[in-house]
Length: 220
Picture 1: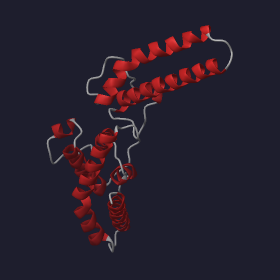
Picture 2 (picture 1 turned 90 degrees about the horizontal axis):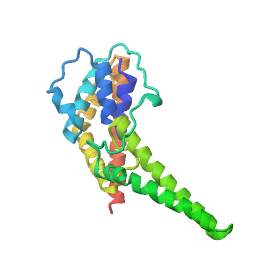
Picture 3 (picture 1 turned 30 degrees about the vertical axis):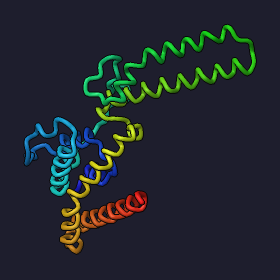
Picture 4 (picture 1 turned 45 degrees about the vertical axis):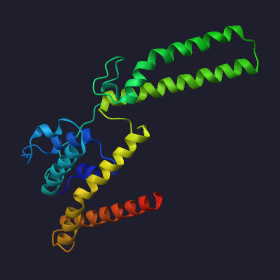
């Protein structure tokens, strides 16, 4: 029987590399990797492709579902100012500016003592609130990277989002032939589990085709 967690990871639009390795470690006990384990040490389009191959093989083999326990949020690592080994450039900039941002907020807040009640004081208060929200957002993104080893989804710089899209397309193209082969081979299988998996892969093929078509229209 296929593992629901692995099935969800394989079918996700953007699959977390770290979560994929966690699933491999959880469900792949006893599974011999068909490639050197060192390939999975860092995230790249090639290592993601290899991780996908391994998880697909484990998913097709099936097995008993181990109990997965998730660490409470309070136990997750948090960002430490100045400790930025492996952080992407935009998060390095956030970390460097944390002190400056905090100093600017204090400076703005201290100006309130020189102002009387009125529009000018209200405008200053709104400026302080905006600065605080920006400061907290930067901390949240830094904490997320410290906890999960990846950029918070939806916060990637535009250039990184484009790279992620290319990587995603490369992943899809690499598994596309296997999706077609499996769905054709087992869509009429006597094994209900294989028929179900064939149907899921056929649906994935349709999703890929629809996405490619949407991108074609968007680029015109």
